[in-house]
Amino acid sequence: EKQRGISITTSVMQFPYRDSLVNLLDTPGHEDFSEDTYRTLTAVDCCLMVIDAAKGVEDRTRKLMEVTRLRDTPILTFMNKLDRDIRDPMEVMDEVERELKIACSPITWPIGCGKLFKGVYHLYKDETYLYQTGKGHTIQEVRIVKGLNNP
Image (cartoon, rainbow, N blue to C red; front, side):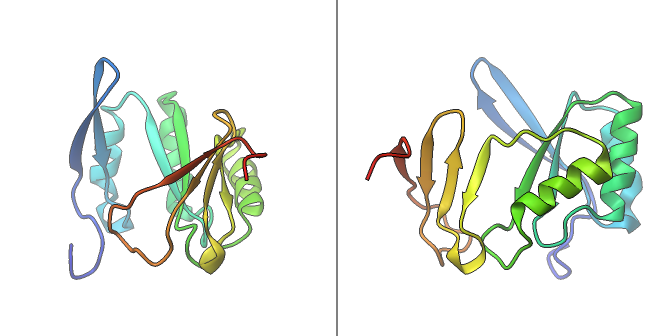
């Protein structure tokens, strides 16, 4: 797994949220291990679908969407890798809607992309989350700015 940078089995992570304990099941993304993913989808209450902002909707994503649709499983979509060279986020969101036949309503929106990525704007909270670039996978402090008119 580490050598190829792919998951071959489902892993479980837990975290508390309000009065609940959330179990996040990370399924294999590689097609060779899809059976484990399909089995996992039979046991979940909802799905978090991660879309690579550079690649957009992939064939495997379409297949997994069919499974979730058959089971009437709610889906949240997360667009990742915004700090890399990616396609226009609006274009990717349009592709998700068109290809997967779902309506998208963004909660956050990127501020810049690739090397110009600075953070995200949370549309409902009216807050901007600014990140430091070049920090890789390290946990970092996030600067939060309230409102768009805040200097």
